[in-house]
Image 1 (cartoon, rainbow, N blue to C red):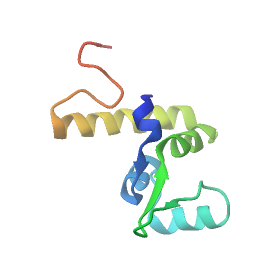
Image 2 (cartoon, rainbow, N blue to C red):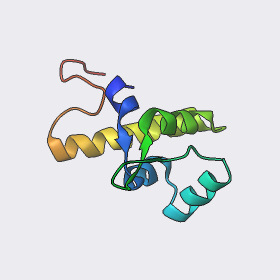
Image 3 (cartoon, rainbow, N blue to C red):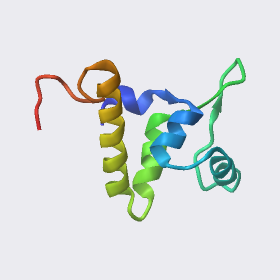
Image 4 (cartoon, helix red, strand yellow):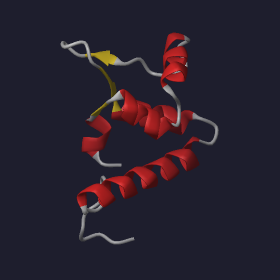
Length: 95
Protein backbone atom coordinates (compact mmCIF):
# COMPACT_ATOMS: atom_id res chain seq x y z
CA UNK A 1 0.00 0.00 0.00
CA UNK A 2 1.32 3.41 -0.91
CA UNK A 3 2.46 5.80 1.80
CA UNK A 4 0.26 8.62 0.48
CA UNK A 5 -2.82 6.39 0.74
CA UNK A 6 -1.92 5.46 4.32
CA UNK A 7 -1.62 9.11 5.36
CA UNK A 8 -4.61 10.39 3.39
CA UNK A 9 -7.65 11.66 5.29
CA UNK A 10 -10.74 9.76 4.18
CA UNK A 11 -14.27 11.12 4.02
CA UNK A 12 -17.20 9.24 5.52
CA UNK A 13 -18.28 8.09 2.05
CA UNK A 14 -14.81 6.74 1.32
CA UNK A 15 -14.76 4.91 4.65
CA UNK A 16 -18.22 3.48 3.89
CA UNK A 17 -17.00 2.27 0.51
CA UNK A 18 -13.75 0.79 1.81
CA UNK A 19 -15.27 -0.95 4.85
CA UNK A 20 -18.66 -1.83 3.42
CA UNK A 21 -20.30 -0.30 6.52
CA UNK A 22 -23.04 2.33 6.48
CA UNK A 23 -23.10 5.62 8.38
CA UNK A 24 -25.15 4.37 11.34
CA UNK A 25 -23.01 1.26 11.76
CA UNK A 26 -19.81 3.32 11.58
CA UNK A 27 -21.17 5.66 14.24
CA UNK A 28 -22.25 2.74 16.47
CA UNK A 29 -18.93 0.92 16.08
CA UNK A 30 -17.01 4.12 16.81
CA UNK A 31 -19.15 4.84 19.88
CA UNK A 32 -18.60 1.29 21.18
CA UNK A 33 -14.84 1.48 20.54
CA UNK A 34 -14.96 -1.16 17.78
CA UNK A 35 -13.90 1.25 15.01
CA UNK A 36 -11.23 3.99 15.00
CA UNK A 37 -12.48 7.43 15.86
CA UNK A 38 -12.72 10.19 13.29
CA UNK A 39 -10.66 13.36 13.38
CA UNK A 40 -12.69 16.56 13.57
CA UNK A 41 -11.21 19.20 11.29
CA UNK A 42 -11.39 22.93 12.15
CA UNK A 43 -14.39 23.42 9.85
CA UNK A 44 -16.28 20.64 11.63
CA UNK A 45 -15.76 18.00 8.94
CA UNK A 46 -14.91 14.46 10.03
CA UNK A 47 -12.05 12.49 8.46
CA UNK A 48 -10.42 9.14 9.15
CA UNK A 49 -6.72 8.45 8.67
CA UNK A 50 -6.44 5.95 5.80
CA UNK A 51 -3.78 3.79 7.46
CA UNK A 52 -5.88 3.38 10.59
CA UNK A 53 -8.92 2.28 8.58
CA UNK A 54 -6.87 -0.24 6.56
CA UNK A 55 -5.25 -1.54 9.78
CA UNK A 56 -8.73 -2.05 11.26
CA UNK A 57 -9.74 -4.10 8.21
CA UNK A 58 -6.55 -6.19 8.42
CA UNK A 59 -7.27 -6.92 12.09
CA UNK A 60 -10.61 -8.56 11.22
CA UNK A 61 -10.65 -12.38 11.12
CA UNK A 62 -10.88 -12.37 7.32
CA UNK A 63 -9.25 -8.95 7.06
CA UNK A 64 -6.34 -9.66 4.74
CA UNK A 65 -8.56 -11.08 2.03
CA UNK A 66 -11.15 -8.33 2.54
CA UNK A 67 -8.49 -5.62 2.42
CA UNK A 68 -7.00 -7.03 -0.78
CA UNK A 69 -10.44 -7.22 -2.42
CA UNK A 70 -11.43 -3.70 -1.32
CA UNK A 71 -8.05 -2.30 -2.41
CA UNK A 72 -8.42 -3.85 -5.88
CA UNK A 73 -11.97 -2.48 -6.22
CA UNK A 74 -10.80 0.96 -5.14
CA UNK A 75 -7.87 0.84 -7.56
CA UNK A 76 -10.13 -0.21 -10.44
CA UNK A 77 -12.64 2.51 -9.63
CA UNK A 78 -9.95 5.20 -9.55
CA UNK A 79 -8.28 4.01 -12.72
CA UNK A 80 -11.60 4.13 -14.58
CA UNK A 81 -12.18 7.71 -13.42
CA UNK A 82 -8.69 9.02 -14.08
CA UNK A 83 -7.42 6.69 -16.76
CA UNK A 84 -4.33 6.09 -14.59
CA UNK A 85 -3.09 3.01 -12.80
CA UNK A 86 -4.58 2.26 -9.39
CA UNK A 87 -3.43 3.77 -6.10
CA UNK A 88 0.05 2.79 -5.07
CA UNK A 89 0.95 1.48 -8.49
CA UNK A 90 3.18 2.85 -11.14
CA UNK A 91 2.34 2.73 -14.85
CA UNK A 92 5.72 1.03 -15.37
CA UNK A 93 4.93 -1.85 -13.01
CA UNK A 94 2.68 -4.56 -14.38
CA UNK A 95 1.43 -7.55 -12.37
